[in-house]
Length: 103
Image 1 (cartoon, helix red, strand yellow):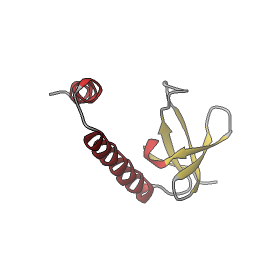
Image 2 (cartoon, one colour):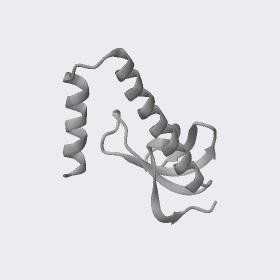
Image 3 (cartoon, rainbow, N blue to C red):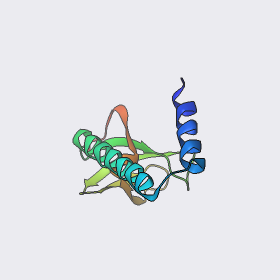
Image 4 (cartoon, rainbow, N blue to C red):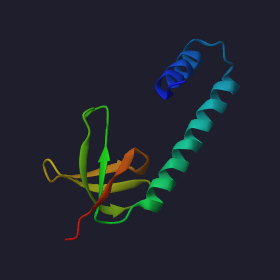
């Protein structure tokens, strides 16, 4: 089964299923755990100067930039398009393979 189809089925099941409050809280906790694990995994692979890509609801086309600082939850990235600094949750970042900026 395609990943997108599976996610759509899970979303429908959560939205329209008959769940108790305890069950919904358990699902939310599992999602928070997965996000934290992903954030830690991404941070282990990041370093200052690494090129990254991210997509947000404000910018569905995505953007790229260079890592300037790595904090506990957020990574400060200089946006390639306008040179602005953005604080982005680490779990939203993808490393642009094979590209490191030295400056």
